[in-house]
Amino acid sequence: MAAFLTDPIVVTVLLIIAGVGMVLELFSPKFGIAGFIGLFALVLFFFGHFQAGLAGFGTLTLFVVGILLIFFELFLPGAVAGTLGTAALIFSFFLAGENPVQMGVSILIAIIVSITVFFLMIRVLGKKLVLFNKMVLFDIARKEDGYVSNINRTELLDQVGVTLTILRPAGTMEINNERIDVISEGSFIEKNARVKVIKVEGARIVVREIK
Image 1 (cartoon, helix red, strand yellow):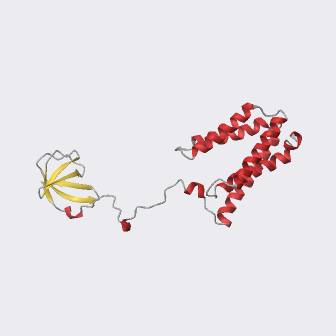
Image 2 (tube, one colour):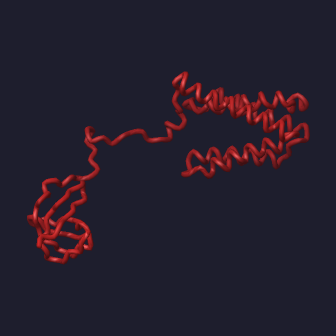
Image 3 (cartoon, rainbow, N blue to C red):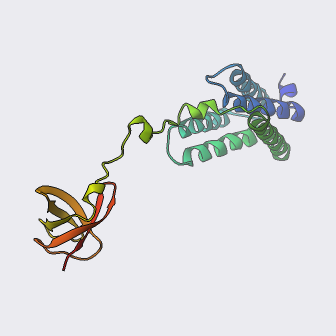
């Protein structure tokens, strides 16, 4: 059994099955048959190399750590955990392999086949990444649905008022007995100065001093 499972051809087939199984799981709403088959292929891979004395508990630990880091990448920002997890996973394969060159060829073939299946699922079969879609918010707060990011005070355009505070450049002015937060167009404006609203961009109200 150990000799069979460590044969270079069998190793390549097991890695291909594992890679394709994981790729297919990306298009599945929940962990299913493809994922179990992929994991079983990895179990056979490490079981054979462990029985043959090529892989130890350190290699198995590195493999488990790689899987956990890739899993954590789904919930952590950036790509550090995923990159380290992938590196640990590939390194564990090399540690388990008897011949690094043969193992490298097997891993390369498995990656090429997995990527090919991935693009076939998207381009040919029109599948969508269900796993990632469940983790990404696609809802849009549209104006037609009543969502408003802020109140656009366009009625204040060209209105004249008096500054209640110094504008440097932000501050407060008064228009028609209403206190409004404003910002000058860049210049320093003293308190109690007459200013005119020259631009309204949502909640951002820009004023200019009237000399």
